[in-house]
Length: 223
Image (tube, rainbow, N blue to C red; front, side, top):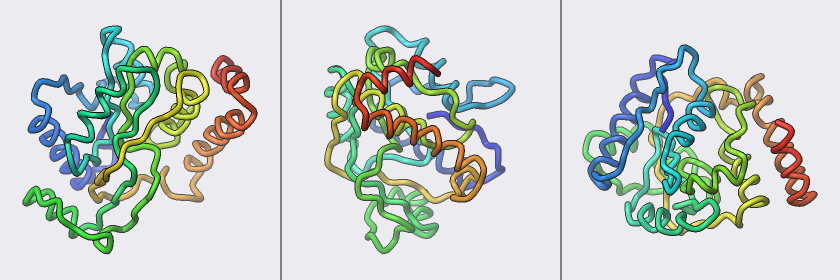
């Protein structure tokens, strides 16, 4: 759950605290890695690669957005069981991006009852927010691409393309992921330089996947 407070956003910090508590409540035996790796310059993909590389060979990894959780923890338990086999498992079908009022209600009351109208956006088939896979899958896919910008996006979908082509088809479960509201990072705003950079890299994976697994393998090897 990589995170460093680079914007001074109290909403982002509060979301991290809630999501960490959610895992502690539902999965008390799990090992929660520190969200900040302590390196002088924070780069989320590099932090994830280092963290996974340090885990036991038989580890199952939950790569989680620090503002996202699942409506039902049973979705994640099932995803972890499935991820013992090769490939990536998405433990959700859609992602509900809450508006500020709905997000505040979650933080204050642990209340998860809200409508689509209480969301800024509902993404029906999102790839990201939470991914579950084994360390062996991560190795077989060549790890995560560290060319992506330091703080935001595209890296999870690129990893999905690599796994789909080199390891096994991505599997998706039914159910919702919930994203708590916080101010957007500049890199998540269309039109910014960072946004263009990350999606240019992601387009390489999309195009390679259309050509076949050999093209994806060549792309991964050339990084």
